[in-house]
Structures are given as C-alpha cells and as structure tokens.
Amino acid sequence: MVRPLVDGPHTSPLSLLVFRSQDVVQSHLEPYCFCRSVSTLMSKLTMMPTMNASIAVTAGIHLPQAGPAASGEAMRQAAVLAEELGYSDVWVSDHVAVPTGADYPPSAYVFEPLVALTWVAAYTKRVGLGTTVLVLPMRNPLIVAKMVASLDHLSGGRVILGIAAGWLEAEFNALGVPFAERGQRTDEAIDIMRRVWTDDHITADYPVHNAHFVSMRTKPQPQRHLPLWIGGHADVALRRAIAVGDGWHGAFLSPEQTARRVKKLRAERPESSFPISMRTRWDAVDDDNDLILAEIDHYREVGVTHFVPEPRQRTIDGYLRAMEMQADLFRRAGVMMVD
Image (cartoon, rainbow, N blue to C red):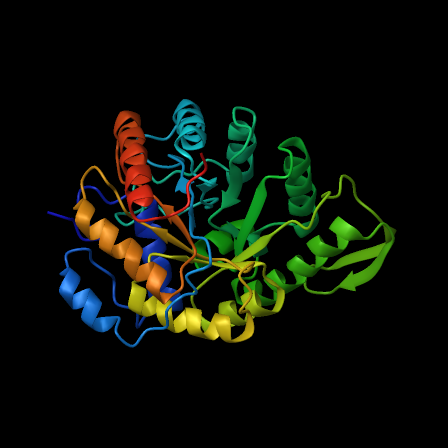
C-alpha cells in the first residue's frame, strides 16, 4: 500500500514544514495522495498540456539532510552513490529555526544548506549541487552571493541555486527580518547577487536592505552564468520565475496543480533551457513502484522536465536502497540518467 503524502509514520520532518507552507501560500491546494488510482489520475489529466517530447527529462535526489537518518556521513554516502547511480544533481533544503511543538518535532533539524553542499562537493566530481530552496530574504544577499560564488568555484561550476521568499513567519521573527517585506527583499536580493557576480564597480542603493554600494566589488565571481531556479507556487512566485529565473522549482504538487502553473510559465518562457522541476516524496522502498512510474509519466505529460525525489526512509541504509530503486524506476520511465 502506498502511503498518503501528508501524514503517517513515514512522513519526513521537512514534509510537515512544506505542507504548512502550502496552507499559508496556497490554501486551496489539495494535498496529493499516491493512493488515488491510476485511472483517476489519467482522467484528470486529459485536458492538460503535454510537453515537447524532444525535451530531455533529468533527475536529481534529495540528500538525507534532516531527520533521524541525517548526518555528515549519511549525506556523504548518498552524494557519492547519487553520482554512481547517474543522478544529475543532489539537493538540500533550508530552515534556520522552527517553532517547538507537535508539528515541528525535535528531529526536524536541517543542516545549513550551503555548508552541507560544500561538504558533499568535496567527495563528488560531477553531480550538480542544488538548494530546494534557499529562503533568500532571511539572509544578507551579499554574503549569500559570496558563499555561493565561492562554492561554485571550489566545486568546478556545479551550483544550482534554488531560491524562494519563504513562508514561516516565526522563523523571520526569530531572525529579526520583517516578514511582510519578504517579497521585496527577495527581488532586491536577486538584483544584488547578480550585480556582484558580474560587476566590478557597483554603485547602487538598495533601500529595502539598507545597502549602499559605492564603486564596490566582491570576489570570486562565478565563471559562468550561475542558474537561479525560483521556487514557490503562488502567482507572484511564477511571475518572479518568468522575469528573472533560469528555471522553476515546485514542491509536492499533484500533476493537476502543476499543469496550471506550467501553462503560465511556458506562455512566457517556452525555451527548453528553462527547466520545470518538481520535488516529490517518492520512496521506492515503501511505495507502489507501478504508481511511481505512472506518476513520472503524468508529470512529464504536463511539462515537468526535472525531478527531485526525497525518500522517507529513517535509516541511511534504507535511504540508499530507496535511491537505488528510484534510479532504476527513472531509467525504466525513460528519464535521462548520466552513464
């Protein structure tokens, strides 16, 4: 039996956080359950846009960064295995602090994402290093730009910076960052980062951050265009992705919910170089593998071009086994894995 996504003994700590975000940002979304029959899913997808078959579909994997299985050794093993199995990239999430309470168990710690990616970069050579997603307005954008550019240099140009505006007001309050300004801060931070990555003589004022540049520069700068994948499901996030993003990165939406957003995105960003990425909770150890295969097909039909599954396993051995089984499912589904 495939377990529901929202709750249950195998729900990861981060799952609780993300579904709380849907309550805040997109309260009308139905939590999606793998228990629906394949026929029901197919009937609901009949009117959805289909993707161009020529667009390659790729897959990354979320690392065991949070919960009981999380550790430096677990992340190292998972990253090395991801490279061996042909995943294109590895991903980590972001929370600085969460409220104490039933919805946020003590195991819901999250290793700092850029530190975690630096750790696994030292043990890998090929896989991309992604954030799903960095809550940008909680941080000083100049420091983020410096850290990300440094990581991109040290890793040989492998960073994919997924960013979003955030949703957890208590977290912003703990950091002393005005929650109501998170959209403005996100937009301004993106501009700051892109400026310092490309300009050696920045003179500009950024009022939301109270930042003032007078003929300033920061090194290192990326030696390439560093990709920004914009996260978030609300219209404002989609507009941000269209305007300044190099891709869109959603999380835990059903194919029906995804299709509506893909339609808006592709109307303005039809190019194949603009990925449509979806983070999922597929766990090939516990979930019905035929349903996972059907899910892969359904997401592809509505335009998803990249997947980031996050297994629910509570031990590192189980996590690694889920990664192996998921890689096999991706190959069976025709998803491009790196040989």
